[in-house]
Image (cartoon, rainbow, N blue to C red; front, side, top):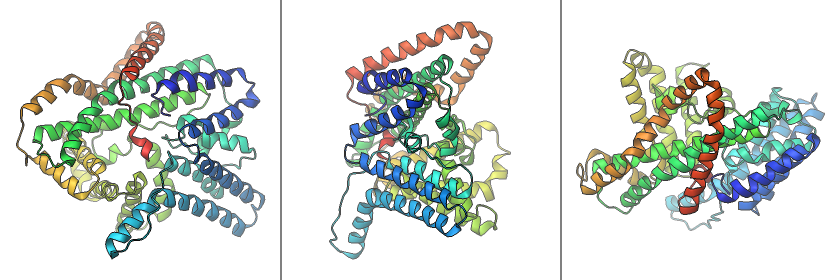
Length: 468
């Protein structure tokens, strides 16, 4: 079940919020836990037990670390048990098929490939759950004694399968006591409607442009440069509005439930460098890898060579986190190398360039990165880059048709991703607060009606990050 579905909007969310608001405060975390398990079981009836096991494992590890707080060996054993089992589960379900396929190809073997279905959102809830035990071991957070409260944190449906990656310490205080007010509910509903508009009205409409072009290139058809560029630009905007829309919906629902989730996107396509881009894109993932991989490896504290090593390891793992495929590894290393170049070579020169050139530089490199991300094999990656360079000619009549058909939507994508609309709204809200307070409910209703109409009449409603 995805947020942008009729079932979720009019059945699941409506029922959960109704029960959540009418139940007394001491029962609200039970509603959160139960609704989270139900939400997950809706799409993964078997793998919900895997998530249940993960929550029990890390909750127990936390209790052990707290009980034997004066015994460093037991504390370390509890942490290692949590980390090793969590990562092993992730490895088995997400990476075992990839490993077996490559061993078979490399050594000419025919080892059995389990080819296990990937549990939805396993990368997200595993990272969230592990952050609790790691932070507890470090002394950065306090142990949660109540299992229901802990399970409510891991299983909270708004951020369960797609983030943002909420660390335990982000919501620890709110798990015990939170304020639920009409103001927070209204703010949450407004943010949810913005995310819904991004996902359903923009991402779902620009996505088919990329899907058709990708299928053509994958099938070996000759694609002219204009068509190839239109396709990858469509994906560039689709993945942003798709994932940032989902993050906005998650944060909005969190507010409606009384929680404050961290921001996950901040107009990343306005970045002036790749370093700046990764401060704005999927910020909770970047922060997680920085806190639990890059800094423990030594960060930038031990000289240039070790800093380069640490960056490459971190970004290789970041790429691999997205999927068990060589293209994701290439994507991670691509950005790792760019960040290294900016840190040690290009940074001082970039600062001297006009802002427009810096924006163009960052945006183009990000667009190239999405080719690595979406084309599954090195051969397909090379084929698509050649198409972008003009191996299939410059344009044809179909290119002109696509450009004329999607021109207005592409302009909307540029404007909506650039931050201009946000700044305009903020200025209007500061100048006309009463008028905006009246317009917000109208906007929410209009988006819900428009999104419902689109969902009823369309079968195209993917969520790209669901596969991670």
